[in-house]
Length: 356
Ligand code: ADP
Ligand code: GN1
Ligand code: MG
Image (cartoon, rainbow, N blue to C red; front, top):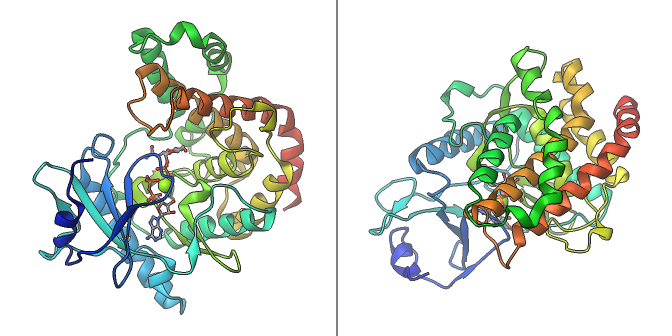
């Protein structure tokens, strides 16, 4: 990138060493090794077209969390993101080229992980995401902008997939016939959660909507959940989105972009650890239908993410950051392998849910 980061940093009153940081697919993240240490992020404005609205959501949500954490005797500097305003008091800086940058305090003594080392560590992330949702239960949802409309509307994701297939912008459709067929064979089930929202059996809540393991900071030493991060997509949604998406990523025995599919399975021990912790945090507020759909939500959110990766592959890789050719196709294949495995385990998963 041609941007002079030190010039950008002078608008936040810092001028020190920076380096690219983290494994996110969307924003450009930099570690700024100043005093205090901070995180600088270039917001991906081709995805978040109204950065004002994204930042208004984040400011309001972190302010709400700060009050809750203080009331509970916690440390808001560690347990929620803290925005650093620009010298002009703005929540983010717009560079002359139109790029948008925001800054957060660096969360000390904690790490984000791409894979859980054991089920306990994964359970810690469930407690963190569950607690996050509990703390936001009384946040006025109508104050949130819908920054990406239809974000977890799986039928709409399927519609976008069909459009991409029709357009075949990158000329790749002919080479991914098995993946296309996989999507079409699963078209029947995509509206199960949106239908439940529409008939009122699954309520809308303030949800995170991007609950992969590397969006939560765990204590470096104890691996206890410290802080939920990546708040760009906090919007009204279903708790099933947060549950299913976390399992999609965290209960897989391999990386999201693993090319050896024999390494990819859906691990029921991890499912059980996460489910137990999530129900401990949120069980009291769950409706019967939410509880019933927990296992299916893991399948649905995995299918949805696979459809999104395949759609992006067909579009010529315009959404998710890629690091190699066919990266989005590799990601799609792990998701579909997981879906096929989850399908064989749904009964077992329902028995696990019934235990808690
Ligand atoms: P993306 O939207 O691209 O996924 P994230 O907000 O998730 O970006 O940030 C990417 C990575 O940067 C995270 O996985 C985490 O490792 C690190 N990170 C982000 N914010 C902080 C923070 N405040 N303190 C420490 N690390 C952070
Ligand atoms: C993106 O931003 P990041 O890397 O945490 C994406 C999620 C996907 C995920 C797949 C705003 O998450 O929806 O599930 O990649 N975020 C956005 O790994 O689209
Ligand atoms: Mg992230």
